[in-house]
Amino acid sequence: MIMRPGQQLLLPANPLFIWGSLIAALMANILLSHLFGRAAWPPDMLALVLVFWVIHQPLRIGVGTAFIFGLCMDVHQGALLGQHALAYTALSFFAITISRRLLWYSIPSQALQILPLLAASHALQFAVRLMAGHGFPGWSFVLSPIIEALLWPVVTLILLAPQMRAPDPDANRPL
Image (cartoon, rainbow, N blue to C red):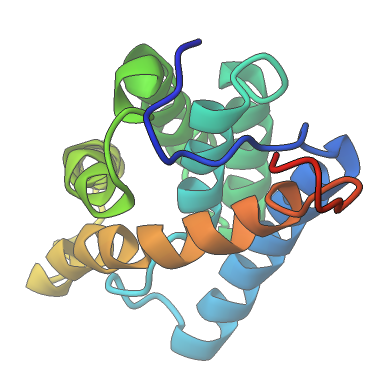
C-alpha cells in the first residue's frame, strides 16, 4: 500500500493487545451500564473499538468477532438476544467496506465518516427494540453516536500508540 507523505510506518499489531482492548471495551460497556442504568446516551465503547480494529486489522477482527461480542452484550444487558449481535455485525460489515478508503483520511475526517455508521448501528438496535415492543427511550439516544464519533480520535491515538514506537531506535535509521 502506498503511504501518504508524512505518515508514520506502524509496527504490526500484537494480537494480545487487540483482544485485550476488545475485552477492556466490553468491561467498559458493562461498567457504563452499571453506572447509568438503561440510559440511552452513554457511548458504546465496544462498538467503537470493534470498528477501529475492523478497519485497521480486517484479517484478524471481522464480522464473526463482532457477532460473538454482540451476543456477550445481549446476555449481559438482558436485551433481546441478537439485538447487539445484529447491530455489531452490520456495523463491522460496513466498516470493512470503507476501511481501505477511510485510512487515507485524517483522524478527524475519519470521525465524520464513522458517524453515519455508528448512527445506523444505533438506529438498527432502536428498530429491533421497537419491534420487540419496548417503549421509546427518549431523544437522548441520538447523543450516543455523536459522543462515539467525538471519542474516535482519542480511541485511535490510544490503540495505535503501541504500534508507533520504534523497534530499535537508531540515529542512522529514520524509520
